Length: 205
Image 1: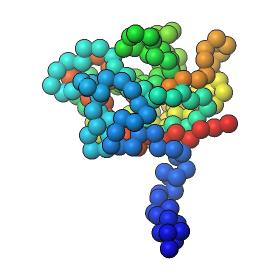
Image 2: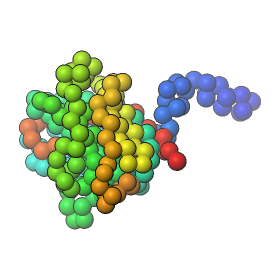
Image 3: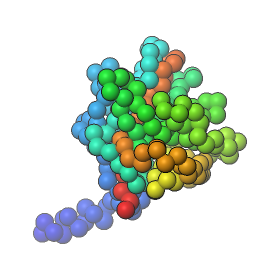
Image 4: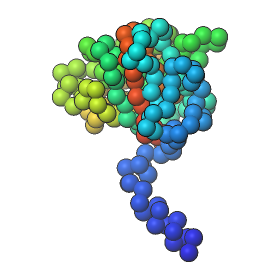
């Protein structure tokens, strides 16, 4: 009887979610994550929410996984709220010791043209690959939920927003590490919030 119940439960899981890999945020707790969960990050309606609409964001803050990843497909949903909001998803990233910043690749988001770009946070401090904002604007839903799919495989990193591939980047610097944590960001600036949910990782060989 238990086997039949378990099999029935599996059949109810959407195929897209089953193929997405392991859920790394349970929607209820910060288990498996670390960061400023006292002031900056909270959980609302099953989502991680960084920032506030009641005051300026004083500095960049990151909520990081407690373990690292190398080759993987990361899928998550996100939305930005507030004029001038900026945020991003860190991949293959390291915490800077005794500091609020991190160092590594960032799948960027925000106006006027950060959406879908690949940025190098606190390392080379530059856009490594620029998205075509005209194409992104055709699929992007501002102030609403969108989907990021981030694929890291060897030296190659690909980003897609709502099914549109925005970046296909191959790292040429042999000194850049291919392993690190995943993190979600709220950027310093005006009152704003970054929301993240349905976070799944499918690890690759």
